[in-house]
Length: 151
Ligand code: HEM
Image (cartoon, rainbow, N blue to C red; front, side):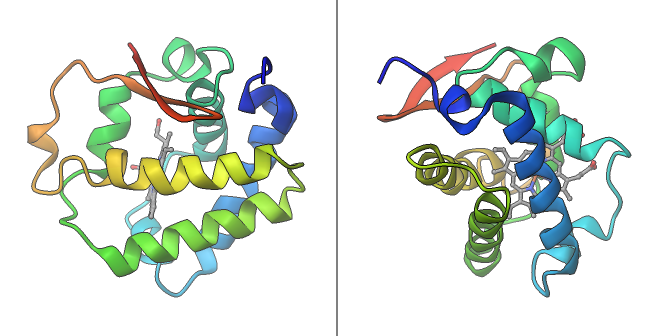
């Protein structure tokens, strides 16, 4: 398909809806809410929407406005590997995509992307945030799966 997952999903407005639904559901999920108990940026949803956009073939909205990919990796690093926790996060995100009314086939691709990113981003540095190198790629994804990286 010529159009990116980002475009087919509905562009930045769709990314914002997904980020809002994810955050709403994550804050009340019995497993996932714990991660947010240590606080989060006031504009978390906008930051996540920008990162999703950039990862799914949209504009470089995260790195042009908010910071580096390494920053995102550091936020998620040092939590060891928790498969139950990851499974819960993946299920919550899938519900968020449904609540945000993302059309197929973008909805399925978004869910696949999150499941993949949960292991590559969230679990890439399970021991410590100090292990994250200064230069990290923004993980990008298209209809065929991971497509490499951009700084
Ligand atoms: C179980 C899965 C996940 C949990 C529980 C989780 C949790 C969190 C928490 C608690 C924050 C706020 C931390 C802070 O502001 O200090 C955060 C921020 C963020 N997360 Fe996740 N996350 C998960 C998966 C992911 C995945 C898979 C991605 C990427 C596709 C992602 C992208 C982001 C971004 C972009 C931010 C905002 C970074 C910023 O402040 O600029 N997260 N996440």
